Each structure stands twice: as C-alpha cells, then as structure tokens.
Image (cartoon, rainbow, N blue to C red; front, side):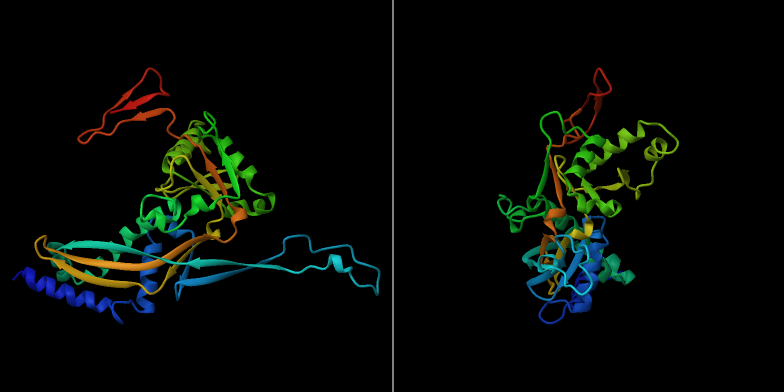
Length: 336
C-alpha cells in the first residue's frame, strides 16, 4: 500500500535529522562532502581554488622573490655584496567570511518517490548543492559591496577586485575577435605569461559563441570544422590560452588569470534546518554557510570592459513565443 503523506513527511524529518549534528551543524565529514558536491556542479567552482576554513577568518600565506636573485659571482674568498643578497617577500591574503543562506522547498510527492527508493538524503543534498552553486557563482563573479542587491553587496567579487590591469574597450572596439584576447594578454605582465596553458579567459557564453563562430568561419578540417562540431566539454584556445564560458559572467566583461589564483574560502560550519509548509505541502530545508572570495595575486589578473558580443543582434523577449526574423543582411538579426 502506498505510503501516506503524513508518514512520508515524518520519515523525511527523520532522514533530514540524520544529516544534522551538534545543533544543526554538519560534522566535518558531512561538510566536506557537501563542499565537494558544490564544486562538482558545472560552474566556476569546478576550476578555482577551494579552501575549506575552520573558522570565519583565515590567512593564506604567500612567499616569493620580486626581483633577480642570481648575480655575477665575486672573486674567490669574497662575499657577495650586501646589496646583491636576496630575501623572499612574504604577504598574506586575508579571508573574512560572510554568511549566506539557501532555501529549498521539496514537495511531498518528491519526498514520497525518494523515500520509497531510499535516496531522499541524496536528493536533498543534491538539490541544495545545485541551487547554491549557481548562486555562489553569481556572487563570486559580480559581488559588489556598493550594489543595491543585498546578496551581491555581501562582498566584492572577481570583477570588482580586478583593479590592477584593466583592458578597456571603447565604442566600436569591443566586438569579439582574436584581437580582443590579444589585447588582454598584452595587458598581463610578461612574467605571468610563461605558463599560458595554465591560464583561462573567463568570458560570457555569448562571447564564447562569437569567438567559436569566428573560428568556425575558417571552414578548415583542422580547426574550423572541429570548432563547428566540437564536443561540449572542449575549450576554444586563443594564442595558447583556453577560453572558458561562464554562465554568469556579464557580456561586457572578461577576466584573464590562473584559475587557482582565485581563492574561494568556505567555512566548514554549515548548518541545515528544516520546517514544513502544510498548506503548500512542502518540506522546507534551509542551509546557511559562510564564505569569501579573493585573488591570491591581483597583479596576475586582467579585466576586460566594454565587450559587445551582441553588437549585431537585437533581441526582444516575449512571454509566449520567440520568433527570429533575419534583416537585410546576415550581420543583422531581429528576434521577437
């Protein structure tokens, strides 16, 4: 006999309680597992550097040499001149987490299906991870403490923090072509261009589409055709640097840096709490966590502004239908 809705919700409460330890906080093993689920989502979290934090603050130490350490050797028996002796420079990146919240509503019928299959716990955590990862990407990229959006105002994201090297494209110059990526690379200090294959151009999907289209126009068996029919998981590469389409990157912006130069600190004290809305017949699961985003080396970041991947298209969104009508030439399209 099919399980009643009341018993379904009671069982759901019991299963959710299995996720909860110490007043609602996930234990370290559960928290690390949830962080891995977040990172596994198809967002920037997959490739940037994730740093689990035991508390709300953390210092990431940096050490390196800012200038030449090799010099001509003095005559035998003599010391290297004091001015030629080298000492590493040390810095710290300070992470200070801010609290964020995710709320998931699971209808009773979903609970029933999953309880009968014994996978409710996986469903709950995967639903939360899927939704939270998308929202975290938005905060990581476009967070701005001057924003009128309370969520985005929690912290400055990658765009706002990229202040050292800005490649600004003026009117008519931000149309997507290989020149845009060349100019961004030339804005990057030479010392960081030794390992270009480890860098990424983080761009909006529209920018990635425009770039792929310009490459596909070559119609060559080695590059054009492969780009036109390429597998979804493969990146376009411009001058040796892969181009990564990021869903929540604004069309006007792009960022060039090493993925591991972006530090996402997440506090492992993750709390899960539950409630019910009996009129809507849903189980409500609320997750709170704390995180922060920082560049380890701001000097190794280039921000592009003024890009116009949609310069040749006008789109109007309607509620019930989308119809595209080509204009007098292939370069102009009007969507209504």
